[in-house]
Length: 316
Image 1 (cartoon, one colour):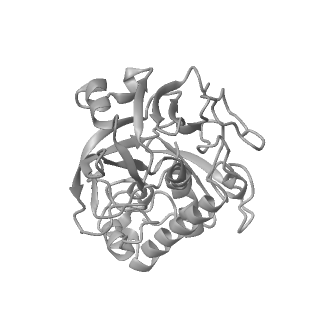
Image 2 (cartoon, rainbow, N blue to C red):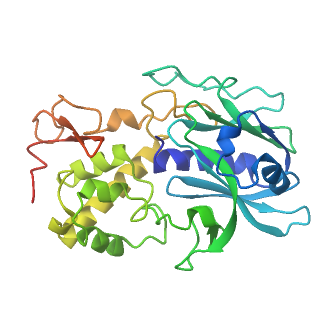
Image 3 (spheres, one colour):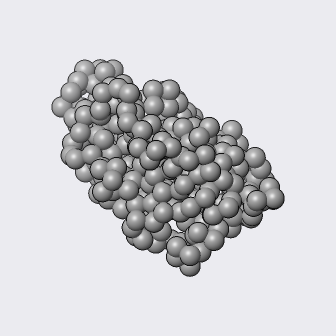
């Protein structure tokens, strides 16, 4: 699943190509991709066609476009999107051709999404370009949502002009790349919970945007085992974990995110290269880069966890 760095790469790719453009048509090829849309395709078209995309914003793994009417007034709604497990937002050229990668394809663990077969919905813009939502597994989707004020009154997310965010994302916590994030408050929340620290990092209502990859990497960096209870953390250790997560996501963002297969690419079809820099995730049986002990992989609470048995000792 694309995590925060991958979604931010997509947001940055969409911004110069879509902001200021007007939606001229919504082409629906698979109604399952708008299953969260109240009123179905008619309501979606009514909210989008003729509207101008004024900003593209991200909080955690959620993206949304702000919408304005033909007179330039805000409509009070946003078009939300979530990439799910395999969603891609790809820019198509004016002649309808999907932009293809300029470099080598990502190493694939399975078939890549077919841009034609797995294209579920397209936004047609007034400059002739097209934004395609391609989703092989159909866990992603788009829908409109009314805007509400962020509870803390700060900018709603990265790329937002103000404190308004979609109601559908109002329960999502701020992420570690958000300028308004309060690391101390998040650390105190982690320490108040008895759950395993990895489960807490994956809880999008505590801190958003972290998934399996970056949780494992942050815990390796902070020398903390995945199953350490939150109540066993000191404030210093909790802050170290959060700072490690932020640092590893910043490094991933700098190289386009992490691509293990062709399911994640950016809007131009290019892969991210951070998989080459991972210290723990996906490296079961390889030596720990820090101490040389062989890394292990276990299934915990239904997810893979990668860790070093020497550097990340059990703390109960």
